[in-house]
Image (cartoon, rainbow, N blue to C red; front, side, top):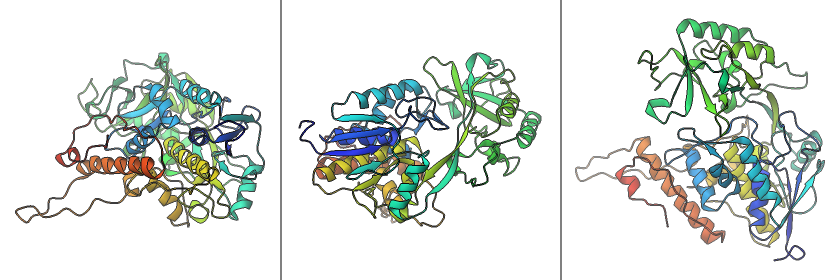
Length: 472
């Protein structure tokens, strides 16, 4: 199919959702006009013009058969998703999480998009939704003009919440005589752990309480998403809240004492050389001077050199249940599809996955085919069904989780007449295989796509899980 004769679509935004949408549509022989306003016009959070730039964490979530994000990763791998492919070859050690080297990851996605013969990249701001079939994946920092036009198109008001990024530390400034490398419960030693005594924790907490944070403009309303809550907001909920949350010491034996500390701050590797480390769960909007003072109260970080301070910015999203179908089409205009944070998702992987579905369905529309929804048993199917059917009152962006997919059938009584109930650690590998098999069958048979069973990270499995192999 040549550039002159193939059908075409427009994609707005080259973040994770937009880049994935463009690659998914182009893989079906559809021409794509991909609009990206950076670097012509930058956002408050981005620092480059690269595609799929990671602004907050560098992790795409936990892997394996017991992780909901692990299932979503496997679904995307099975159809050759561009984002997870780039992540797999840009990965850094992070225990059972898929973490990436940011710049390498972005460069790989950018190259894949720019070098595709069916994708034309157009730099500059889009102020209005274009005519024809379009995927709107302009991201959490959609420009005011485009956001207003999307609101006009949907007939509903746009919503917003605040998102925050964590500070990044130079490894050379970390005191490894105080800190140690380990994973929780003897997992691989991919994290640096900073242990607190009770007195150290209370001193840190007191400074955190007194630190000055971002002051919103009069027109801004601070509505934080629970999955990316700034550390200072977590602290407002009580003195013990941080140490029962991101600062939990569970499963971390301090080698100097052989016991769990009172609290722990963890750092995760950011670059391939291991020179840059970000504070896990320490997203923050504190003013930079106060931020440095608080960070340097963490044991082992008393001389910490912060190479990138935490920042806070406004995210924009639609009330998905009011305006979207599970195909990610707008009900007001089915030729327009929405993906990523703007569609009501939270998380890098979720953005990429909805981008893949929106791009796939936009290409189907351009080819005269009906758009599709993945099966309910799949994690992507569960996510988009939730977006289309959630309670629109107080709607907030959603991460993937096991509650989005149907429960397993009720267990049957055994020979002795008793019913053996499975625990969640036994259920999840079964849900994983069921969901992945359903997704691959749908992608191959209904969507007509090339499907390749992905490798699944090895884990201890139950007999029930082994009885449900991934289709090959």
